[in-house]
Amino acid sequence: MKTSIDCLPCFLKQTIIALRQLGRDESVHQKVFRDVLAIMQDADMSKPPAYTTTLIHRKIRDAVERDPFEKIKKEYNAIALSLYPGLRDRVKAAPDPLWAASRLAIAGNIIDFGIFTSIDINGSIDQSLRDEIAVDDYAFFREDLGTNDDILYLLDNAGEIVFDRLLIEELRKAGKHVTAVVKGSAVLNDVTYDDAVQVGLDAVCEVIDNGSDAIGTILPWTSPVFRERFEKTELIISKGQGNFETLFATGKRTYFLFQSKCDVVSRELGLPACSMLFKKS
Image (cartoon, rainbow, N blue to C red):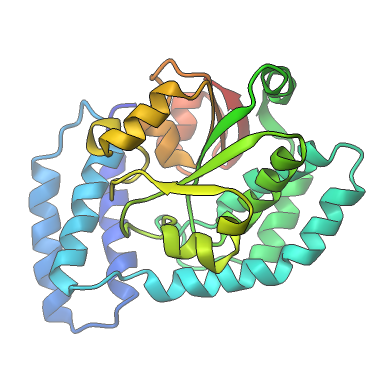
C-alpha cells in the first residue's frame, strides 16, 4: 500500500490519542505536535502509512520519555483475560472449534487504540461475531494446515492477544508448532513480550520478538534473526491492518486476519469500512 493524503489527518489523530494518554501539560503537546508535523512534511508517500506512523510514535516516546500506552495495554489485557473462560467454552462447544477461534481472533482486532479512544469489548465482539466475514479464505487455510506444521503467528494489539491465544491453542491441539511474534519494543498498543507473559501466551507456545518498534512488520527494520525465521517459515498468520499494509506484497503464504478499520485500507480492498477478513495473500 501507498500512503494516501487521507492518511494525514489520521497521523494527527494518532498523535493526539497518544498524548492524551499522558495527561501532560499543553506545552509538551505543542512541541510534539510541531515535531510530528515536520515528520509528515517529509513523509514518503510511496510507502505504506506504517513507515510514517512508526517515526511519529518514536518521536512521541522520545519526547515524553515513556510509553504512553503502557497503562491502557495492561488494563485491556486484564479485561480480555476476564473474558477468556467464557470465550474458551464458546470455542469448545462450536461444531468447528478452529473456525470459532479464528472468528474470535478476527473479532478481537477491534481493540486498537491507534484508531479508537475507547472500546466496548463485549459489545464490539458480539457485533463482530454476528457480522459476515467479507473475505473468507478459511477453506484454503484448512488445506494449507494439512501440509504445514510450522506456523509463524504475527501478533498485533494488547487485549487482542487473548483472542489470538484461543486460536493458537486450537492450532497446538492440531499438532502444529506455533511461534508467536511480538514487537522488539513498545510502539502504540502493539504487543511486546511483557504482554505475552501477562496473558499466559508464553506457556502456550514459543514467543519471539522481531527486533523492531515498527508499526506492522517492516522487514528491513526487523532483526536478522527474525528475517531468517520469516523467510524459512512456509505458513504465516498475520494479525491487524499494519501487518496487512506492510506484508501483503511479500509473496509469502500468509493469511491476514483483521478488520479494515480505516477508509484508506477499505478502499484499497474494495470493501465497506469495518469489513472483516480472513484473506490469503
